[in-house]
Amino acid sequence: MSCIAIIRLSCCSPLKPGDCVLCPPGEAHQIINHGDEDLVYNVIANNAPADFWHYPDSGKWGIPGVGYFRPTKLPYFDGEE
Image (cartoon, rainbow, N blue to C red; front, side, top):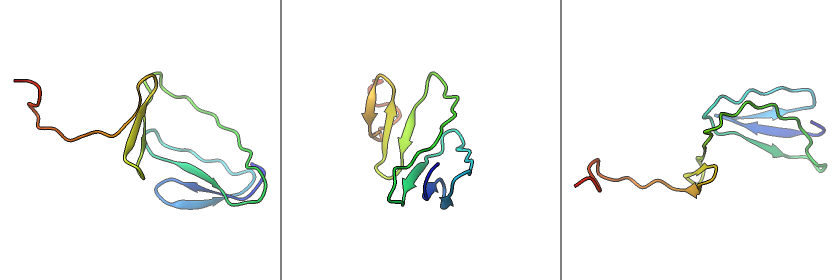
């Protein structure tokens, strides 16, 4: 990382060059650049092939090859009759 940033997990924490962050599976996360320079960082990931993600601010979900959507609550037997 080459500038000042913030990592947003369950709370926001400052990041500085040399920091390392672990984002647990299924937990939303975001890196926010608060500097005037481009933010440069390295990512090491071991994502499962059946990956999906959730954007808690907008309530959207995403699935590779499917796209983005917002789930709708339905009765348990909806469409089963």
